[in-house]
Length: 286
Image (cartoon, rainbow, N blue to C red; front, side):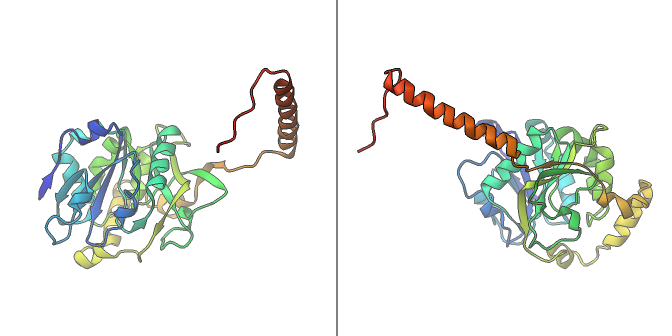
């Protein structure tokens, strides 16, 4: 492994959000950082064969071949200060299409609603395994009992609780059933799929992971973990549990009527104030 891990980048910008990306040559992260007002730092952990690939895009950078989750476990074991420096952590796959604004808002909603574990929803045209993770446009978020390994978000406490599991499955299969049992602090509203900030999964499932590591047996990884954590039964039903939703709901007809009346009254008061000289007419630009 080789890398560049500065000690002051996150503190200098003041952000408390960190994206740790396992990136191949065709990573789509350029769209995530295209705007200048991003509210997150980016750690690129490159697994390809071109020296320095993507390094110019990164606040932190390293080269580390290997599967996603065991390599992230090694990365955080070598740089534990990162967990102290940031409050929220996103571990996306590199084939997700998103804008800077989408990622900023995802972090803002995650922290604003005091979530412990979450993921952005996938757009309806995404490659996907589980229908529950597809975007529900009528919702801001859904409180669930399942977050998949494609793009999970952790708060610091949940990351510390779950970190020991990252190296338990080289393929990553099975981890998404374990994490919700370690997160949430007993609250049913602390694990969520965030529908307000959907991202698009652009490539078929598996991709580079299985091409680069044909020896992996994901089903065996999952079966072993489910048995170890006594979650075999949960595997069949957990992804269908939704505790509550935060919906995008227009105001009621009565509320809209009252607001319309109040706007008319405000316009009349403004005109009276103009006539009496209490306010001045704004000067139109030339």
